[in-house]
Image (cartoon, rainbow, N blue to C red):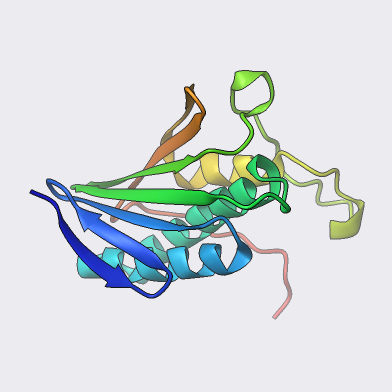
Length: 166
């Protein structure tokens, strides 16, 4: 039997080990979702490095839902499902927005280091970044619902690169 817990702006259900967060597909919903998932993952024993990877990937996925699936103007909801399948954390994001173009995930590409941010083409870099941080990235459309799933392995060695001079 599922138990329910009220969290500001969301409902979290716990059916058989999976934690489900329901939230509005808004910028505030993205912030709330990332914050609450981060708290949950911390309880799973995630390192700061793990948390950074999870927060980056999840924020990018959720922002894409708001910006592209709901076009930033249509009201809707999104759902984050989190399942601790040690050593992986399995994420499923569901929404009822527009489907992906051609019914599949774009490949994505790295940002061009020679161009300023405002000169970069829109699209692709976020998915490229998610692919670098996550494993088994999958998309499907079932009826009127999008489902994007991915896994992040806790304790994985990550190589953070930055071109920012400190």
